[in-house]
Image (cartoon, rainbow over all chains, first blue to last red):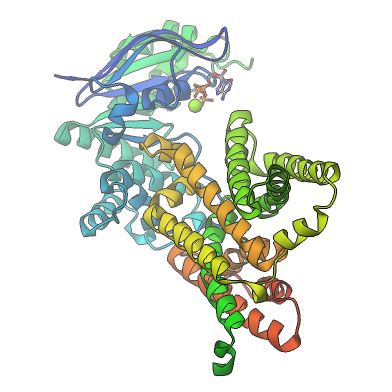
Amino acid sequence: MSKVLEIRDLWVAYEPGQWVLQGLQLQLKEAEVLALLGPNGGGKTTLLKTVLGLLRPQRGEVKVFGLPPEGARPLVGYLPQLSPDRGRFPVTVLDVVLMGRYAQVGLLRRPREADLQKAREVLRVLGLEGLQDRPFFSLSGGQRQRVLVARALAAEPRLLLLDEPSTGVDIIAQEDFYQLLGALRDREGLSVLLASHDIGGITALADRVACLNRQLHYYGPPGEALSPQVLERTFGAHMQFLLHDERCLTCRRQDG
Amino acid sequence: MAELWELQFMRHAFVAGAALSIALAGLSFFVVLRGIAFMGVGIAHSAFGGVALGLALGLEPTLSALAFSVLVANLIGAAARRGAFREDTVIGIFFAATMALGVLIVGLSEGYTVDLFSYLFGSILAVGRAEVLQALVVSLLVLALLGAFFKEFLLESFDPQVAQASGLPVKLLQHLLLSAIALAVVVGIKLLGVVLASALLVAPAATALRLSSRYQKVLALAVLLSLACTMGGLLLAYWLDAAPGATIALCASGLFFASLLFPQRA
Ligand SMILES: Nc1ncnc2c1ncn2[C@@H]1O[C@H](COP(=O)(O)OP(=O)(O)OP(=O)(O)O)[C@@H](O)[C@H]1O
Ligand SMILES: [Mg+2]
């Protein structure tokens, strides 16, 4: 299996000396889902941005499909943590999803029928076809989030980077979405790197889990990852999450 | 109407006004959506500095105003990015700095004052062939740019982060847009006065946004409103013997206020 993502000794800081990512070592193979878990401020978003080439590491190496991050962008779909808020920006849901295909369409070209069809198909798969002509700004927060997921998928990426895709999304849509990700992985070999706070839900889907709080506290299969010791090390005294399974019982919720 | 077309100065005014009002309306779409309405006034004042600088250095003032304003527009973009400020904050600073530069130069070199104002606030009813040509060239340039990269400008205005992540040259796009605004505003000032250029850089899209939430319609409406106000304003100014910049600007802002009286259209 080929390497989709290869991270070696990655160090990233926004301000000199203030290391947000410290010596990270990670890999992602084809058709693998890697879940990033960690507390607020643990560096999940920073890691995703580095993989996209939006941030440059001070030290270490990031290769995406064997290329530097900038070179791999056409193969990558991205859902940012914060959705755009530009007031009454006059675009419909379909327009927004179509934006996901702009890189494929290319400069100086207009989207073609095939692009429109792809956009509609993705909307259908996510159960959003009824919204396609609605102005984007008129949607609820969770609906917007799902439309932006659709936009990321419309690019037909080989690697999907999702920054907290289930923010504001209801349980049913969330379950459906995890199933869809699983199906895309199994059928089409899609690789997914996703930051999440939904420890219980995501571990059913993820092939691997990375517990990140500045440093990597764990990287491996989900089962053992969630031992109370690992979680304690990752989240420290600020354990903000309730697990959705039997392991809850051993985790203390503490307010720091 | 027909006899107006016989008058060469009216012909010039209509052609230059139409071209420029379409270009400004197209730009207004992005100016309003990106919240950089202050850009028009900012550039207008930097043009003042550019004219003064040109006169002091013995350059052609229109060209020096164009070059200086494009430079300032790009510096505004770069400074906003570097300092992680909104453009409007930086415009506020450049606006004062370039105006101050102009005032300083004028003060140091006696005798330019009259020239300066005629260069800045020329009347559309007195434009010559060269100025019409200038307006046409700049308008076509702006429209070609908007047409060629429309979907990129749209994505970059809606979601800059994803635009960059998807591999678009976002910095280049920002600078192209700012340069286009500077060019159109300076030519607009030259022909039609400072009031009109800033009015048409904001009002058409703002009004159109009240009438539709589809970008295709918003764009079409903005162009239509801008064109209608320019043509109507020119005629009115001719009949009333008034300043065309003022009638056009009043029309554009009047339509905006009128649009507020009706409920927002989806
Ligand atoms: N633009 C920035 N400038 C300076 N520091 C930043 C910036 N963005 C993030 N940081 C810092 O980097 C650290 C990691 O932030 P990051 O956004 O990667 O965390 P996260 O794991 O995504 O958190 P969350 O769960 O809240 O989304 C935090 O301490 C944050 O304060
Ligand atoms: Mg985050």
